[in-house]
Amino acid sequence: MAENHVKVLILGSGPAGLAAALYAARAELAPVVLTGMQLGGQAALTHTIENYPGFPEGVGGPQLGELFQKQAENFGAKVEFDMAHEVDLSQRPYTVKTDSGEYKADTLILSTGANPIHLEIPGEVELTGRGVSYCATCDGWFFKDKKVVVVGGGDSAFEEALFITRYASSVTLIHRREEFRAGAILQNRAKQHPKMNFILDTVVTEVVGSDKLESLKLKNVKTGAESTIETDGLFIFIGHSPNTQMFKGQLAMSDLGYVIVNDKMETNVEGVYAAGEIADPHFRQVITSAGMGAAAAIQATRYLEEQEAVHS
Image (cartoon, rainbow, N blue to C red):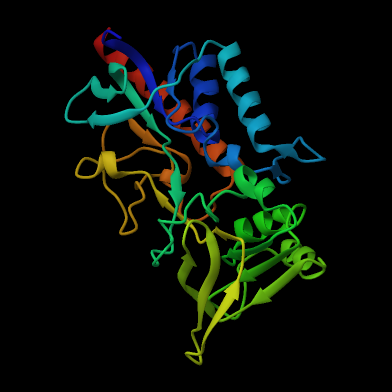
């Protein structure tokens, strides 16, 4: 691919990136979206999204991503199955190097999302894909009539645990604290489910198995008591880490590595915006990410109009 010069380049194709593409395309800016590893972002890994307005019966994560993409493309957005690996924000137009070439961009909207956080315990890496997973939608089916453990206490842990109950014979939710952070509706649904069990004040200290997961070593954080639980699957949902490594040293970031933006989605670099989970440690919802993406595109549009006015 030869060097491409675009007015709006969007990194990431989750709800934030595709909403930004829709708004930028309707402003006739011919935005280009680089999908990254996962078209539709983390939302595409969720089996059913029940809290996105307009879908009373819920909507599949992959399906919602496809609808977002189709709508953006209808207005002229271009979605490229490509991944950025180097960004130079030292001067406009900004340079973005990808797997297939290079882009020059007058404005950038960064929506590279976040990745699941690992437990960082012995055996976890070795047995990933052999019983250890971070995506129930991807791997739940493999645990038909088997025992599964889910680690986490937030909404995503409960949503995924409930999803896995359609396959597994039992699902044990392990949480390091005494109380869960998940919403009341999800907690009630899980506590009433006949396949669900709960172990509180406990952490997993080791994943045990040779060629596949066989058991987990546990430790009670209050008493220090150690125990072992036999299981066929371990699903880990303890939060996410923002994909901001590419922008370190170029953009202002929080202590946790999230890009800092103002209420207009502007970063500390002129003409560069961030939206979705890369800049949102608090809400991490499809609807908030989409809203941030729309705001970023509106602001990028205004910025380009001001630039044209200055140089005309």
